[in-house]
Image (cartoon, rainbow, N blue to C red):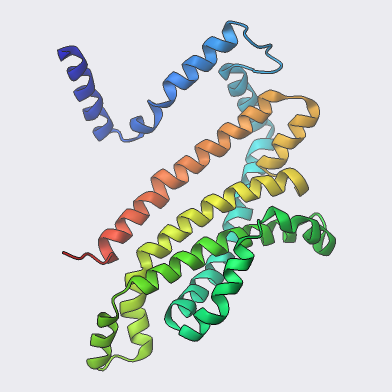
Length: 268
């Protein structure tokens, strides 16, 4: 028991000193099991390649410049679509959250279109815009928009009305109340909506690249399927998971926590 406690305390100290270890250690048993299964020959290598095969594929595709180009294309599409989704979603959420009339008019429409999945738009988008960037951007914007709008509305409505009344009683204009009271109070929810929207948008982007793309990580995986290369498919899946883990755990989650601590409404 003492040995286990010493190992655990050592692990805690190491992860506190190097937080990245906390993200790496849980994957060690998974990689070990994967290696053991492939080395035991449970499945043919054509169906389940080993970790070293995936690493070699990563090195080869990176050396040829294919993987960096595809990854760059996917990230540009994601961030362009997410930026446009934010530019539309945050003002719309603020409008719905602050105006009863806007809420009555827009809320049923939002719920209606939210029920229509992003991939359900593809058939008509292909007729309208064809196999191109416009179709992929529309799907990403559509996917990011709803989490941002809904969380922005929730954030605006969670701001106590007394704060706005107090600001107006002190002579603040409606614009100043919005900028200095409503937005700071709603910001933690807005960041949460952005975090969720980027996650949904990332998955939607990969799906669209598989169906209509000519580049990107999703296209690389689908193209590998045509060639029967399970190694590149697994490589694409690992890149997707690792990249999103890095973005979410190291950027978005700390930003969400910092925003909540700085502007979150704390009640006692």
